[in-house]
Length: 115
Length: 107
Image (cartoon, rainbow over all chains, first blue to last red; front, side, top):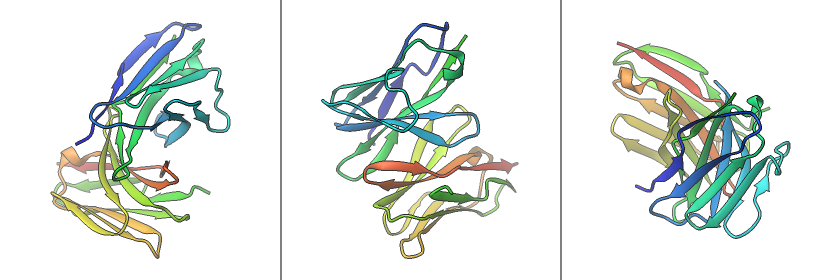
């Protein structure tokens, strides 16, 4: 089946630095990818919709200058957490919808810890 | 009010029991997904439904579009089924998630 690969799976960074997370669709093209954030024992919350070749659409309350999204190709979207703070520590996960059958595929997730 | 409601929130059962997790939603949708999230965080898509019923191994998913309700069943449950099960509805290419059901199967 289709696979979405997310990297890295775990990252620890210092406050003030930036972290880039990659999301790749390995065997299908995804014009749209989604970035979610999940706090412990909570639902996935949509942060933004990443559109290939155009600007991302951010959900209300998500700072676009803080969470930079780049969807440079039909198989790659990146999320960069800029000037990270400890409160940005969370589980970030991407997904892509297979346009042919609307099936959703998820990356493995990235656990970010900002110290 | 969440557009997607799941019940129960937590479920503990003995190995071998038949498990049912319910999902109700309040909007018209194009598809409904059942997802499984293990403690490490990774999410696996179990089913995508737009009508009727699907079966994969010991897992069965049903959906009633008119009643806006779906159920996930697990037959002959096993400790390895322990995970969080999440219902998500697809509308306009966006997924809205339920709060999840934490299932624990005791040997």
